[in-house]
Length: 256
Image 1 (tube, helix red, strand yellow):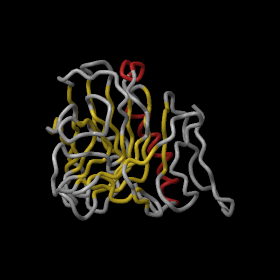
Image 2: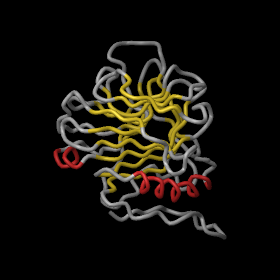
Image 3: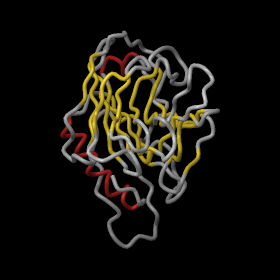
Image 4: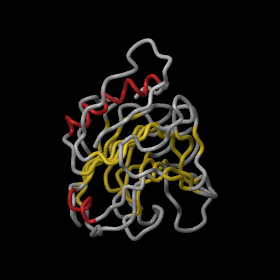
């Protein structure tokens, strides 16, 4: 699909590297209230994101997204896990960091079961543990940690470009990798699905996770960029996308 990126008119030099053509690209968002203030899908004809709760946007990112102890606030990209997407598999890309408070950060999640927000007991996606931890987690069809990727730099104040892939089908293979500390892509953490995934109307949410029961813990993260691609991207192709996105983020004050 064609990707658009609205530019301010008052620039005097190249604003960034041209984004590569990404086959199967369904959604791409650059988040924040500043610059063009466009938190919509940059893919022409792609689904429009919608707020989950009442998210807050800083100038260059979605701020403290997730469960704050009372409600969950995030951005739903509305790329549903229909039969076509499930068969083809997918690639999720996200630039995020942990916030100074909170026990864990729910970076990019969807519910593995029926329609609805990602519940803590049945979520699938990427999480990070606390602001001072070096661990990023892969969750699949449940609250348990399925695989751990140890980062070179901690989650505290450090932006990381990460990818998560799923090979498709009911019992596919997951990978989780990082492209900021290791620009060519860190050795992926992997997991093979054991609980059958079904087609549904669920879609990934930036920062979204809802506890199954009332809780006073927080699940918060900052998110600057996210993309959903139908199909599994090679690690080299994700690295090329990260390299192209990086200058655009740098103009917005995000070093990833």
